[in-house]
Image (tube, rainbow, N blue to C red; front, top):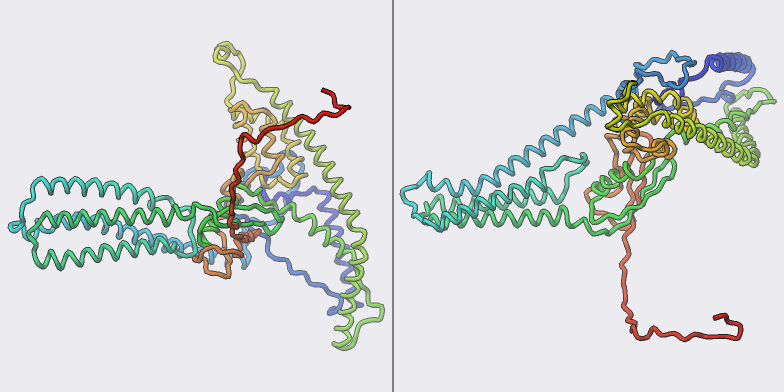
Length: 529
């Protein structure tokens, strides 16, 4: 079921009634506009553009080939165009293209610099060994077995260094960060300075002087490889081991519904801490459902829409009178809303009770329908496959065969719980085929729909956001501190992050002699033994 079906799918009669109601409202508004001041009586409402899906509209439009209301066919389709673009959409698309081009250029530049630096590191020891044989081969002194042993040492050390660099640095990028990783840049600068220093010493003391001691040249190359191995060990400590010990406890709160989680993080910069929080968000937080947040907004709008202010003294003649009338109207609206607030809690209570009752009823019908549907299929054994005269179905065909018997109950339950935009008919059938393949029970099949799961449980192309915005007063390359606050902003919501330093814990020891564990039975006159 698509996101748009929640708002565009309605019955034919309800559409006609709403149209007639809007026509009556327009006629009444025209009648009132003749006798009232336009400045004091007209209210202007600015509607912001609807929030886009987390990956734009492309993924949504690709799934609209099927009927949204697949459980019922008596629906009317509105005439809203799917290809209309507003000025905000054009600006957003242009900005996304510019950001993507800048991100790709920075990514390619970083990879190019890394490849050049890696080639410089691995080719330098080999160049130290080859250049004397090319430039002054007749003056070199033979070193025999000693040089051959050093050759083997250089070869294996370079192989170990190559594997270590591949394991630490050449890993798939998890995300694109707004700033560079400070420690990685420092290590790259250190390696570059180190190699340049070796080349300067080599050019002055060996190339210019044409040193004839080839064994010393080989040992010089071996020392370079050893130093590079130690720099790699330093990189492991700074990039991997330093952040393992927890130092901060961060509280992550979703701005829309207040869902909160706590995580322990080590010595990380703000941008890398934000990356770790986003990765944990997709697996720990329940999926964000904007439809659940619209009830309170509609209730407040309904209460304010029921309030009307009339000007019994007639329209004002000057600007001062109009301003005073507007202030009096606002005060009257606030006072009326305060009086109606005293009884609004009763309406909220009965609405929640009615909603819970409806959810329990739909849940019971859904459980019964799914259990009955699962009783219609049976896994065939190996010895029965040769004897079965009927049709044999694979898991997908079996899922398509039993799905219509539970489709209506499932759709009504998803509509009641406002989850219809989270599950499409194709995804439900795939999940049903998966459960049938692995001999899962009806309860296991329903768990994905009765309990909202994390974001990773749903369709990745439809729900996972590619772009997050990090908002922080401090520099994103600075480390976490006690009291650091920053925001991770997405399309529909934001994550508010607050960090607290884990307190220093001091433990003391108290020795208890095992021989001191002795007891005496205290008997009384009324004690039963």
